[in-house]
Length: 84
Image (cartoon, rainbow, N blue to C red):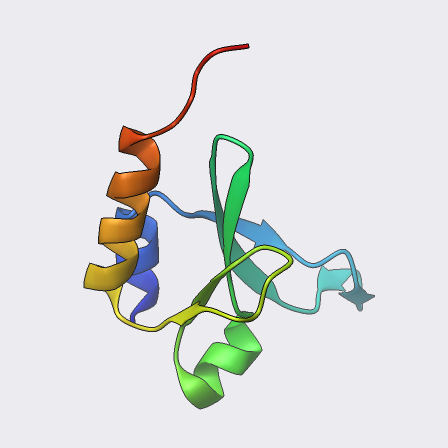
């Protein structure tokens, strides 16, 4: 998956709070759908292995294809419960 595909899917860039010379050590992407967050690996990891997406706090499912994650996002948005 490419970085531009994450952006096109609506992921927002977030920066590490860990700093080196007053600059973030790395960045990653995240999208929130209801109370679910999908998060990418960091840019330094992506340089080695490509961009990947997982559910926040879960590493049992990893998406590496933008078409797959696009379908997941569509399904989550379609089925979101907006009742409060």
